[in-house]
Image (tube, rainbow, N blue to C red):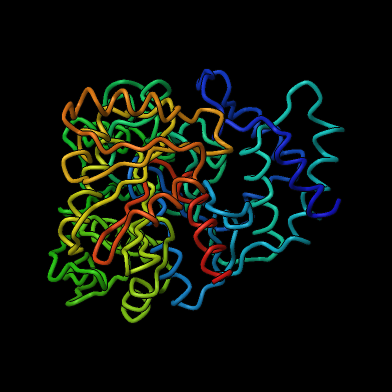
Length: 444
C-alpha cells in the first residue's frame, strides 16, 4: 500500500490512546498480541532490548538510554508513544524516523497476516504499530532496542520482550480508572514488565510503590538497582540552558554531567538511565564513561519543557496528572523569568483535571482552554472552565476556544515582550500546537 493508504489503515484501527471508555483488563489482551507476534515469526526475540515503564519520565529516560547507547557506537532503536506530529516519530533508529516506504511495506505484510490469521480477534492500533517496530528493528539488525511502555505494563503490547534490563520511573496517580486507585495497584500493573531473573532499575519512589517493586523483584529473582541508594546524584545548576549534576554509580563517578533537557526532574530520569547502563555492564555490555557523558548531553525529547520561542516564551510540556503538573510549575518558576504567564490548557476526560488546575491556577495570569481535534476523550473547554471557577472563584481571565489552532492564535495575540505562554495538559495538545506553531513560523 502507499503511505497515504497506510495512514488510513492505521486510523481505521481501534485506538485506545484516543478512546475514552473501555475496560482496560478485557480490552488489552497480551495473549492476542502474543498470538499475533507468533504469526509474524516472533520478531521481538531477535533484538536485545531495554524496557521502561512508569508514570512520569519514562519517555525522557528512554531517550537518555537511547542516546547513551548511540554514543557508545551501538546501532540503536527507540520505540515510544504517543507521537507529537507524525506516526513515524514512534519508531526510529539512530535518530532517523522510520521511512514512509518502510512503514508502508511492513504494514502491508502485517495487514495480510491480520486478514488471513487473526479473524475475529482484530489487533488494536497500538498492537499493530508495536508489531511494526518489532519487525523493523529485526530487519535492520540493530544492536539494541529501547521500548517505552504504552499504558501500564503488565498487559501492554510491548511486554512480549525479554529485556536485558527494565526500568520503572517515578510512579504517581494516573489512569486510575484503568490501573487502580492506589499506588499499590498502579505499581503492580507497572511491575508486570519485571521478568524472572532480570535486572530492574527503579527511580526514587513513594514508600507504597517501592514496597511493591521490592516484593515483585524478590518473588521473581530480579536484582533491584535503586536510584538514591545504589546510584546517587546531586544537582549543581538548574537553568534555561539545562541541568548540571554530579552522579556516583556502582562502577562510575561523574562531576558536572550536563543535560539539555530542562528541569530538575530530568536529573532523576538521567540517573535512572545511568542505572540502566550500569545494569547492562553487568550483562557484558561495554559502555565507556565518555559515552555516558556525551549521551546525556546529546539527549533530546520534544514536548517536555520544550522552548520553541523566547520572545515571548512559548513552552510546551505534556504534563497530564497532578504530580507532573506540580513538577512543571516548580520548573517553570525556577527556570524562567517572565512578566505574565498565559496558560493554554486542554485535557482528556479521564485525567485529574481538578488536581492539575489546583497546581497551575495559582501561577497563571490568564487561561486559554482548548481541546484536541483527534482525541475522542478530550474534555470540553466549557467543562474545564467550570472546574477552574470552582477552584479559583475570583479568577476571571478565562477564554474558551474551539481548537488548538485558535488557542495558539489567541495566546500569541495576548502575549507581550517578557511574557510566557505555557502549553500543557496533553501530548496531543502539545503535538497539535507544535505543528501549528512550526507552520506559522515557516510562513513568516
